[in-house]
Length: 167
Image 1 (cartoon, helix red, strand yellow):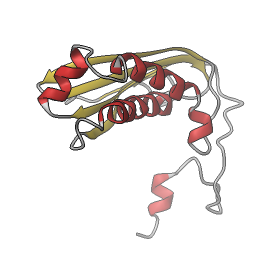
Image 2: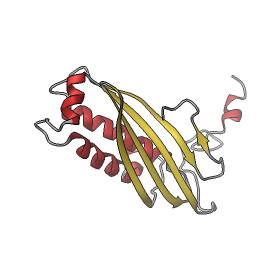
Image 3: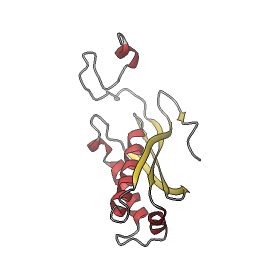
């Protein structure tokens, strides 16, 4: 364990181990893009109810889309030490890779000095939680799974793409 902190180089900790907001003032403004996804697993009848718009609370996916976009815009208020970013776009898309499994994929992008990974991840999470909230009365067994970064581009560390992500 000796030297582990030296190897990790956590940017949100100073030399003494105190939390800090990373200074991005000297970094160049570049185009940043991130894609994150979350899954909601549910009963087939719940999925059919969502697909065909038969819920008592309205169009679940449109409400989840709005929740995700709003969450991305407020990420700096939700995650300590996140920078405020001037988002250029947030897109929330839905698909059904199998019966009873909803994939929520969020793309966030901006021209900024730091990445938009957290905005995409928060948006995917909140969209999934909104689906759960709107359908929990008909399916208490629903669950949110696998909130993850799928890809990112821009920044010092370059591009990243999960090689196992579902297409």
